[in-house]
Length: 321
Ligand SMILES: [Zn+2]
Image 1 (cartoon, rainbow, N blue to C red):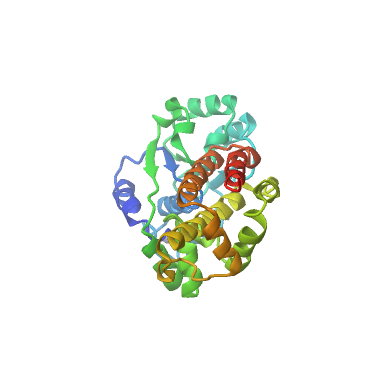
Image 2 (image 1 turned 90 degrees about the vertical axis):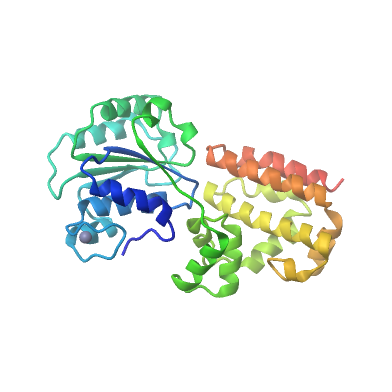
């Protein structure tokens, strides 16, 4: 059954809200990729439509089943595709048009607008009109990575929900207990996740050894050419590789400083690892880690991966000089 795991601090106040008679009609759910925004929107849609009033709990009612399997006729998505470039006015018009019909099944019609920051100016204007004159049986969820990218007039009309990162230890426990991952893989994925379960789950079936080898043997020796090959990759794949890179650089810095294998995330000392730990200064690694953060933020703000990576690859090349 569709469930949001580990986000009780976010869910608890929403349970109260769902029970109250004054449910807001529009919501903004903010958080980075992999933070559970889509799951939360579906969980709330399920709660609103559930015949038994359940919130994030198992339920065998028909509406819950339909929402969880994505076939409920009153739940509609816009821009469900992560790579869609923009949300156009036509899509918002469809939404407005549809919201003028009577509800056919259950109590509400629910729209989930994924990556709301991709709305064109016209689309945002059209949506604003809808939010200004809300219809009581329509709920709108705007999902966004960075609320600063949504215009204030829209933001101010929505109830705001912010996803919260979990402790890395909690992510690890969830991966092992709920998803039955091997502890070692789970630990590495949890360390790369920055506390976001969805990001950790993206490492499912990842070959960590292979990823490490690519960095140590191909990208570190020739960063420009190495990152160049990422240019055509999707944003979320680049983000994932960067999270792994941060973990690897952190291991190199720790090894340089302590020489103690017990403090490393990946306890391995191949020749290339030894070589790069001698090569990169700790200062350079700290700077690279900062740049990785900035690159991640740029990717979140929709900067083209190639441009976002340019500074990082040039900084890494300079480490060779
Ligand atoms: Zn139900």
